[in-house]
Length: 103
Image (tube, rainbow, N blue to C red; front, side, top):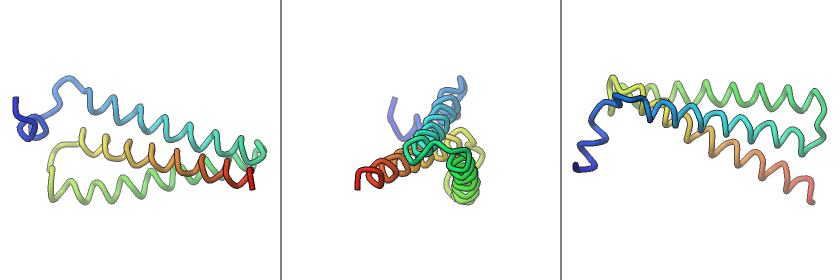
C-alpha cells in the first residue's frame, strides 16, 4: 500500500484517534511535571493546567482551520496533530522548567 494513499484513507479502527489522545495526555503530563519541578504549589499546578488547556484550544482551532483546507472530514488527523503539538509543548515546558531550576 502506498503511503500517500494510506494517509488519504479514513482511519477505520481509530488508531490515529487513540495515538492523538495518548499524545495529548503525555503533553499534559509534561505540564504537570513542570509544575512539580518549579515548586509543586497549588498555584503552579493551576497555572500549568490552565496553560495546557489554552494551548490545546489554540492548537485545535488552528489545526481545525488547516483541516478545512487540506484534510476535510479527517478529524483523526486533526486529533493526531493536536496530540503532536501538545507533546512538543509539554516537553518544551518541562525542559524550560528544569533548566530554570538548574540556573
